[in-house]
Image (cartoon, rainbow, N blue to C red; front, top):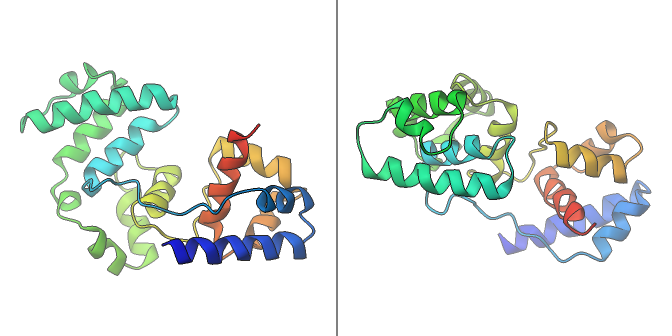
Length: 195
C-alpha cells in the first residue's frame, strides 16, 4: 500500500503539472503522501455498509456516536427491530435500511475476496439493489472496503467544493487523473482540512 501511495502521489504531481493545474500542483508539492488504507477495521461487509449509511449527511461527530451505539446494539442481540435501531439515534429511513441489511443473508455471506472476484457491473448491480445504498455509498465501499485505486466519488459535497477550488472544468480534469482517482479524492478531502 505504501508503494502504491508513492506511485499515486508522483502520478498526481506529474499530471497536475502537465495539465497546468497550478493551484492543485502547489497543494500537492506541499502535502505529505497520503495512503489508501482500509477503513473496515476488520468489519464484515454488512457492518461496513451500516457504518457508511450512518455517516450519510450527518456530522462526523454525530456519525461516530450513532455508529458506536448501533454497533453495540447489533453485537448484543440476534433479534433486531427497527424501533430498537431508532433508539440508537437513527432516523426512520436509516433504521429501515439497516434492518434490511441485517436480514440480508446473501450480503452477510460475502467476503472482500469474493467481491473482488466479481466484475464491476456485478458489484454495482448487487449493491445498488440494497435499500439505502446509492452511488455515494457504493463508491465508499469500493474506496475503503475494497481499496480500489481508481474511484471518483462525484456526489460528495466536499469533493465538489475542492474541485471548484482547483479546476476550471472539473469533469474533464478529473478524468485525467485515472488510474488514481481514489487518491485524487483523498488529496481533495485533505485540501479542505487545511483551509
